[in-house]
Amino acid sequence: MFSSSLREFVSRHRRKFIVGGIIVSTIVFIRYTARRLREWQEKEIKDMLDKSKRRQYFDCNERTCSQMIMSLIATLRDSIIKVVDTEAVVNKLRSGCPDKIACWNELKVLAITRSAVVVYSHAMLATLIRIQFNIMGGHVYKDIQNSNGTATENVIQTNYMSISRHFIYEEIKKLTSLIKSKVAEITASISLKDELTLKDIEEIYWALTSSISADSSKDPVKNLAEYMLLPNYEEEKTPVLLKLFSETLDLLESEEVQNLTQSNIRSGFSLLVDHISAFFVVSPIIENGKSIENGISVPGTSNRTSINTKYDSSAFININKVSMPMAKIIPIINGQVPDKATSKDFQSDLLQRLITNDELKTLGANIYEAFSF
Ligand SMILES: *[C@@H]1O[C@H](CO)[C@@H](O)[C@H](O)[C@H]1NC(C)=O
Ligand SMILES: *[C@@H]1O[C@H](CO)[C@@H](O)[C@H](O)[C@H]1NC(C)=O
Ligand SMILES: *[C@@H]1O[C@H](CO)[C@@H](O)[C@H](O)[C@H]1NC(C)=O
Image 1: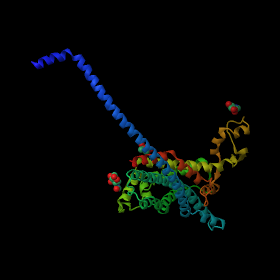
Image 2: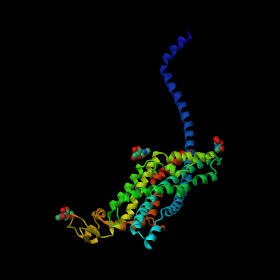
Image 3: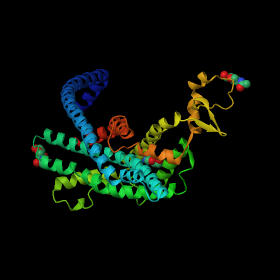
Image 4: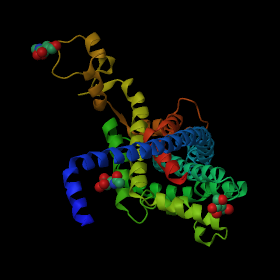
């Protein structure tokens, strides 16, 4: 009885009920959203504060990282100069070498090896330090947030950061011997009298990287972790340190890091050839036995004046036509990594580029982001 009248009542007032229902739920919804909104705002503000703190900490970490790269690469450079000693051969040549040709050939291999070791090792070390600093930075930030900053103590940080010494003093010898054997193979047929263009020099370096890449079991890029980490890092007894090592290992073995290292090696060689090219423009060209004025020969544009060609883009293309005997090129290549660094030499330029390299910075920022939560 009651229920049927209720049903009638409901059906008569259905519209009203529906509207009422909407009103009720809208009020609930507004109340709910206001609360959520406030919560969301609070969270957002907290996040913003966290983010700016995290950002501040990151920027500080970045500056320290760049300084660390500079100082460790200076150490690496000294180590390379000792391991690939060209000065001894140069001195032998100066003081009279019994077999002059053999001495020159030795210098040929050593000079090219030294420049290539610089390109490889600098790209590798700069990558390792970026990775280490950002793993470390992320962990330290997280520790500070959890306000029990004991997990990554200073002693652990120092032990972790010092693994690069192993590369600088030990693995550099392995890298050098690999590169030296490849250089000897590639340049065996180039005699001191052979005339080489800049393009020929570029091809020597290109052949070198191809030959190293093809040697998968020894390629330092494919075996980054083997070159950069301690050989027995798995035996590390401190759990925190072991964790840092295995996180570093994962990154060094990732395709992304290896591709980036390979790409930095490629740009390193371009920069090297660029520095060598400075010695090619000033020398006069000998073409068909006659020297050409200003060192610029522009075939097929004989109606242009030499003043025009001097500033013409065709003058640039022409660098590739300049050739020099190998005996003259060897001291130029050897001069790219002088025993005493200068601010304008190739190696200093390469270091600057690695420090400011955007892709490496992005990699670092992503690692920091991933480890600071
Ligand atoms: C740090 O503190 C957090 C929260 O108090 C805790 O969960 C974590 O286990 C602590 N970590 C260490 C290494 O003590
Ligand atoms: C790395 O380089 C290889 C070959 O160039 C490419 O096939 C691959 O997709 C690259 N991987 C990443 C993660 O960039
Ligand atoms: C002279 O130079 C112009 C461009 O400056 C070129 O178009 C033209 O073909 C040249 N003439 C000859 C005869 O080489």
